[in-house]
Structures are given as structure tokens and as C-alpha cells.
Image (cartoon, rainbow, N blue to C red; front, side, top):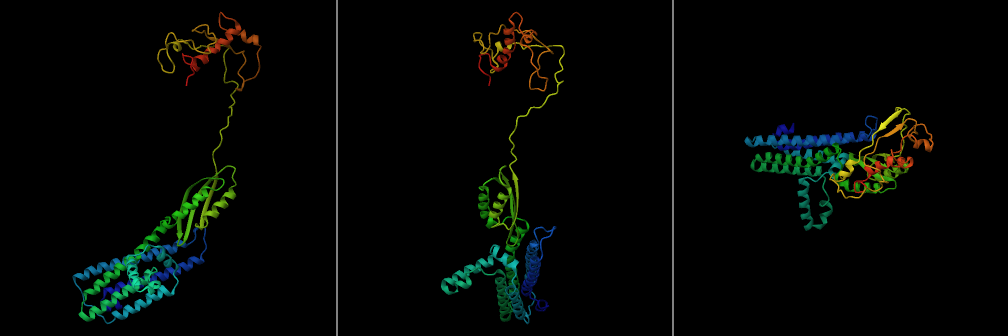
Length: 411
């Protein structure tokens, strides 16, 4: 009502700070409500993000109000109305008293943390430079001006100072355009003060890791990876749950012979100094040593007929080409090693009967046949003795596939 009666847009811009103070009181009430609430199955991490959302909404609404003031100020530059100063100065001091009382008398935990953790605004930086210059002249004021000033108190004082200058210039020279200039200055100060807080609270809502704790987290993770029994630390994720509360989860792979509870206790003890809400997943190494196991074969897998003829491979190709280089071998090359006096190049087929002894270890019936019966079943080579034929009938196979034509083992 006073802004409408004075027709001052600068006082309207300063009144938006009063509306922001009302939102800060609502945020303070939400903070007290969060302290009384306990985690539930739906909100397993608690309700601390509600106050983060309240801070984000309050700062964003203050910036929207500043943008609205900038738009109205541009329109007033085209046609500047007359400003009535009857209630301008009174409204300024009433708003200043309310703003300072709201910010200094009530302990607002969320906004106090954000104002300290967020980056400094351009108004704070300029005031800090001015304070250092004053303290260089008067060193006794260093304890008052050098510490980081509260951004809310700073913008309240700066806005009130701009309104006082506006009142003086209008009363002395009827310079009404200074009201629009003061409104733009207050809007820019509001936007510059609230923007870093919106960015900080927005990053908390996006579950990002705070930059100032990344180095400490890396150091703690390196210490965890060197614990006894820990093989690997992976899938680590840390984020800010609320203002001053860090949450995280990590997977730890341990040895198969390590004690899970002992490793869990050590890991939690190391990370709990920085991460208050921590979830640790312990799992043992999944590496398994391969074991040799024989698969049983059915008895009827080799159902041979009475006479089964297995043709032996020809050895002509072995004499004409080198198996390694696929080039013809020299005619004068020496005979391959381990030939065991092979009688000829062309080997006749070997006739196997079902009455012979079946191989051992493949799931067949075990038994032994007389040595004389083995030699009498046709395993010997034609035209040679039984013992020599039984020896050379299979000796050529490893010589054919195990060595090349020069007698060297194949790679």
C-alpha cells in the first residue's frame, strides 16, 4: 500500500526483500519440522532435502522479483512518473528494521549454512575490497570489516542506503529518474546475492559431490583400498543429502578368505569421519580356480560293427611339402625323427574288431586281453613280425602330425 501511494519502484524493489524474509521464516519453520521428523520407509534418508528445496525456491523467487523490477524500470525510463516522498523515508526504515530483525534475531540454520558455503557475490567482493582499504588506514577496524559479511545484512543496508539517496535527490532537485536508477541497483544487488545460493542449493538437489570434499574423499578411498583383505573399491558415489550432511555408497571386493564383518567395520570407520550416511556393499572375489573333471561317456557311444576298417592317412604329402611353410621339401632331406624304421610310405588299413579291449577311462568296460590275442587280431603290418607291426602301425601317426618333414616339432 505504501509503495502504491508513493509511486516509487525503488521502494517496491526493497519491499521484495521483505517478502524474501517472509520466505526465510517459512524455511526456518521447515527446518525445525525436519529436526523433529524421523526417517520413514518412503523417505529412508530423512526429510533434510525439504529445507534444501525451500532455500532453492526462496532464492529463485527473489531473482524472479528482481527481473520483474528490471522490466518495470526499463518502461519507466521511457515515461518517468512523479514520485511522492511522504512515506518513502518512513517505509525505508520500517523495511530495514524488519529485515535486520528477521535475519539477526532468528537462528536460520539453512540460510546461515548456504551463505557460508556458497560462493561470494559481486557485492560482497566489492565491499571486501573497500573494507581492506579502510583497514589499511585504520587497522583497528579489521575485526569488524575484514571477516566475510552476511550477504543478507549487506543487501538490506545497501538497499536502504540507495533509498535514502533517492529521497534526498528528489527532495532537493526533484530528480525523479533517480528512483528508477535505485530500483535497478537494488534489483541487480538482489539478483547477484541470490544467484550463488540458488546454484549451491540446486547442486545439492542434483546429488552432486561438493567440490571442497573431493580431495578428502580420494584420500579416504586410497586408505580403504590398502586395508587388509580389500582387493578393489568401485562404484563409489557420494552426494550432499542436506546442508552439512554427506551421503554415499561404495562396493568393496575382498579376498575369499577375508572376514566380511571385519572389513566392513574398518571401511565404515574410515569413511564415517566424512560421510555420515554410508552404505557399504561387501562381496568376495568371484574368481574360481578351474578344476579338471572328466565327463562320463555312455557305454554305447562306440557301437562298432564286427569289422570296422579305419583307413590310415597317406604320407605322400608329408614328403612333398613342409607343413610349416607349405613349400616343397628338398629331396635330400633326412628322414624324420622318431620314425622307428617305418617300412614304407603307403600303409594299409588297420582292421579293428569289437572283441579288442576298449580304452580305459572313457566310461567303457575295463578288462585286459592277452598279449598274444592282441597281436593275432590283425594289428600287425603285412609282411612283418607281429611285434614290429604292432609297434609301427601307430608310430607313423605322431610322426605325421607331430613333426614336419625335417624332423622338427611343429609349433
